[in-house]
Amino acid sequence: MSNKNKKEIPVEKNKIYEVKVTDLSHQGLGVAHIDGYPLFIENALPGEELKIRITHVGKRMGHGEVLELLKKSPHRVDQLEDMHFQSGTMPLQHLEYKEQLKFKQQQVKKLLEKVGGLTDVPVFETIGMEHPYGYRNKAQIPVREMNGQLTTGFYKKRSHDLIPIEDFVIQHPEIDQAILIVRDILRKYDVAPYNEETHTGDIRHILVRRGHFTGELMIVLVTNSFVLPHAQEIVTDIKKEIPQVVSIVQNINLDKTNVILGKQAMVLFGQDYYTDELMNHTFKISHQSFYQVNSEQTEKLYSVAVDYAQLTGDEIVVDAYSGIGTMTLSLAEKAKQVYGVEIVPQAIQNATTNAKDNKISNVIFEVADAGKWLVKKAKAGLKVDVVVVDPPRKGLAPEFIDAVLEMHPERMVYVSCNPNTLARDLKLLSEGGYAVEKVQPVDMFPQTYHVECVALLERRTI
Image 1: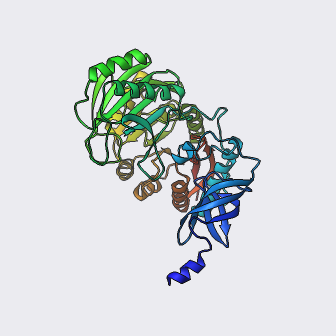
Image 2 (image 1 turned 45 degrees about the horizontal axis):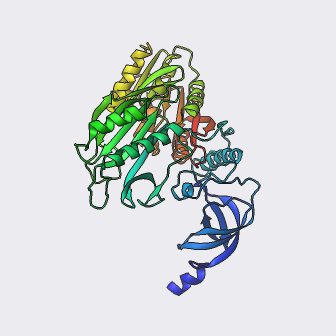
Image 3 (image 1 turned 90 degrees about the vertical axis):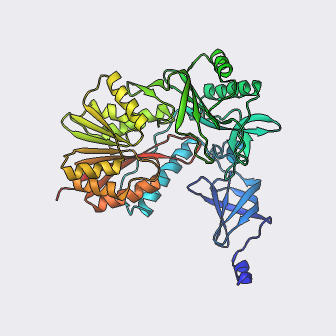
């Protein structure tokens, strides 16, 4: 049996082959075939001819690494550094930006057709950025020991091996600079970096969040203990070296886990929030709160969502997964009443404060699982005109979709960070009586394969 399998697979590990790339996978890997056997290759583009070494052989597919570029794509640009491939932070850095936008539009189209069975839905050109670098307003950087000293960087893909990185390219330069300053201060006081294997050491991660419009910085030190050695000296040095800092928080994570933040925290300086502006509103953002990492593109994304909601001032709107109220407040300005629902209590506290600070009174925020809340309200007979959702990558729970179908709002606006689960959910909603009118991709994460979308659904009249 094993000999038969070997004959069926036309490549061998560590052997060298010449291939032609025919496609890009959804993760931005070049796709080539040898006798029908698919090979996935990093740093490869359609139309390119390559000499590759086979690095992995599976029953159905393999992986290869580029040894020599024999024929180059006209859409290839000089990539920055291999470490951005190795860490997975910039898997599309070698593809010119306008082609990245086309690739993302095509990915959305393919998934709507393949997963959702939606073949005639208009998918517009991806809304991109003029300068698609330095856009991230948040960094979560692991701290480990390398060569005997505390080091920051990013993990190699599919591992916990740290690659030292000082210039992340896609993060705002002030964030990169702040990480290095904090790193050097921690070195100065001999703070012990975390060791995953022994579960020892003091500092696990450095988080930096930056207000895009305000320039305010928040520093979060994630520790493996309640006591951070030399905490007061560290805080004093950070304030001196980084004058933009308005908040320093110690987050305590004692668990053996890949989850970055623990549930307990102490404010070491300022308060547990920084402020930023979005859609002409001011927001207080705590260290635990979800906030879109690309502020410039978020305004474009939310503008599309509010436009698709088609509000006249008479509507009752539900904003599910409302977070700290960033989109909720823009909806409230154009609706009669908005309910914002979010499962994270601290986010709802922020949202309530944000509504008050922006003098918006026609919004009610509630701490709840969005699916269970909607089911409960549907049974109670709440009449809703528009439902807006912005769920996590796993998409909507089946009971949430059932509750929408029971409420039958006139329209639904679906903001998605995962076109795969979007397509799955749109199929269920279309089978339940909604027409998918249009989909607008927005590039929130340039140089990566991720894409966000806004979909408009209208209830069919029977």
